Every structure is written in C-alpha cells, then in structure tokens.
Length: 506
Image 1 (cartoon, helix red, strand yellow):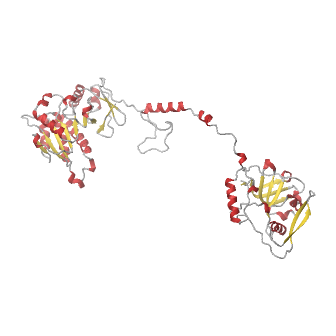
Image 2: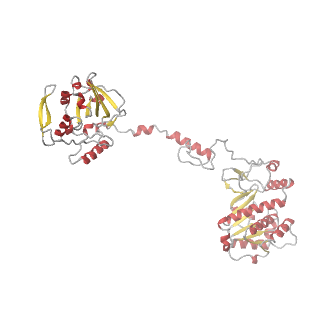
C-alpha cells in the first residue's frame, strides 16, 4: 500500500517549530518509519536541497494535494476526481484508525475513463493548493502503514529558507486556472503575515544621535583650508576613476611659494595653479635685466622674446583660430600700435612686426625725432619690410574703432614725454576710441598712465601695478634661474608649459 502513494503531492505540518512542508512523495520506508519528498517547499518557499526525509514522530497533520494519474494509481485518481466534484462517482464510509468515520469516495463505474485535472505549472512545478484537493490524515493512515504508528516525521536536512506565509492560504478562484494562478502570484507578493510587522516605531532621534556632525564638519573645514578649495561631501572619499591629467601616484606636498624676493613684496599675485608670484620693485627689476644682459641676454634677444609673447597674447585677444583663418579673410583684424621713442616703444614695434606677419592689419604710431635709439632703428627697419602701416601724426590714425590698441607710450625714466603735445593728442585719441587696450610693461605710478588698460603684460616678474593696469599677465623673456639667484631672488618658474600666464591679485 505504501508504494501506491509514490508520486503524490502532499503537505506535511510539523508544528510551529518545523513549519509546513510540501513536495512529491519519492520514497516511503516502513521499517524506519520515514517518508521522503522531492522538490520540497518550506512554508511556501522552495528549499535549497532536492529531497528531504521526515520521521513519523514529528508529523502533526498530513494532507494530499495531488494524486498520480489513472495509469499510476487508480485509487488516488478516483479520490481526487470525486473531491473535485466530477459527476458519476459515489462515496463509501470507512473507519479510520482513531475510531472516527471518514468518507472514502470511489467511482461507481470504473469502465469510463476519468480525466484528472492537474493544477501544477509544468515549467517550474509551482504547487497550487486548494482546500478541495486535500485528503485527511486518517485516510492516509488507513492505506499507508508507515504513517499509522506515530504523529510526525524527522527531517534529514536542517538548512531551509523561512517564510511567514502558510502554503494553504493560496486558493485559486473557481472561474478558472488562470485566475487562480494570478491570485497565487499576488499572495506570494503581498501575502505576508501582518503579525510580523513590528509594533514599535523607528527611533529617529536615537539614530540621528549616532551621527557626529561636528567631527564631519571639522574634517571638511580642515580639508578646505589646506587645499584652498570648497568641496561638497566627505573629503576622505576618493574618486573611483581618475582623469587623464590627474596623477594617481602619491607625490610630495605642493609648495605654492616657490619665488622668494629679498625685499618684502608690496603686492603678491597667484597663478591659476595657486603658485604665489611676488612683485618686485622697479630698481630690482632693472638690476635683474642688467645682470641678464651681462650674461648674454642682450637687448635684441629680450626685444624679440617680448615681441613674440606680446603678439601671442594679442592674437588670442583678437579671436585666435576662430578669427584668424583662411575662411575669414574679410574679417581681418586691425590693431593700433602706439609707441614712444624708447626701449618700451621698441618692444611694441617688435610685437607689431609679428602681428603683421600673421596677417593682422597693424597701424604703427611713432612720433618724429631727429635722433632715434639704435634698437628702435633696427626694429623699424624690420617692420618696414612687412605690410604694416607707419604714421607719425594723430590725424592719420583711424577714425573708427579698431579691434585692439597696444599701448607702449609710457616709460619708467623719461617722464617729460608726457608733457609733449603729441603724447596728449594720442592719449585723447585712445580714450575716445572704444577699442580695448593692451599695455606692455606699464609703469608703476598710476597717475603717470594716461590710458586705462584692460590687460597689462609684465616681463619676467611683475611690478606692483595698480587697478588702472587691468588684468595682469606675465611673460617669460628667457632669464635663466641662476641669474635670479645672483640678484638674491630664489626663483622657480611658474610658467609650466606656457610662455604667457594670467596673474590674479591675492
């Protein structure tokens, strides 16, 4: 009789401690009083092991959920067919082992084939349980001798998943298999027992007290003071990825003050990288150029370097590659170059020559003097070989605004030039013209500057320029490091990969 129930799907209730198990009967041992289930489910959740074995002493209730087909076991098929309410079947009452009566249903005519509906999903073998498909434990005790001498079973494995949903809570509707499956899925998702919901509320104040806000904010402020930047978030967090220009190797701390002058600087600047560039006095700057010239950095070299750097900056201010390309021949920029009869004027003439070589329309203003400096004569000789235009009268300057005005009128030594009529006339023209002004190596005294500049270009090291100098830029004119050391300046180049860098006031 025990082998007749092999293949049946049963539900075994082992009490509150072990829970409810469901599965297909794979083996029944009458000697050891055990029963084995394959593909077991524990409290509605599929177990991790393929088979479990129970001892008869642990079972408290057993229900048959599905019986094999007609070819496998006729009695089980008849029983399920009768309980499902199929017409043409009868019932017979037989006593159970505990003395109580139990309805035993058998078919009236065994000649007609009976269709046994199966409510299992053949894809994943999910068990759909209905109270109408359950058989009592007493009927099972009558036909299976291995289940009549005890109240439960011993399980072989002890690693099971837990769930609060009882498997018998899933009941498909009578409208069809599809609705029953949908409701079964709903119960699997939303059928948790409400008794497991905690009664106590979440302690927000207690969990908030675990967060030490003072320590976190102190760490952020310390990081911002060291780096000079503001950050959002915890400073200790490192990015998961690095940029192409970011060093992933740890290096020594950055020293931002790499230039030290012998005298206290009246004004300090800083680069985009945060390096401090102190200003120097005009006397120290003049001494630096004199020592560099003694070591071979002649005036001609310095003028050429200054002209190249100033022209590069002017080309960037004029639009760079967006303005100066073969497709924009009709937008050729115009630059008015105002120069005086001194070394500063020679620097401006050198800049105008390079601008004219880059297809910029240059109008050079230089007053007539009986005797010119040799440096100015040489630069004018080279400038005359370009397409640039040279004028000596303010009347020959354009009446319409130009793209850029380069101011090289002022000089550090010859202050008497500012009293000349041509100087005042040129200053008035520049102030009336609405073009932006670039000043090359302007003097220190703001009152001596007749033209307000938007940008100023300093050479080597900046002078303590005022607000009328505009935004200050610094260019590298090629002074060696040991020349700085000779005049008492501890120097480390702040230029990096560029020859012209912007400076910011600290």
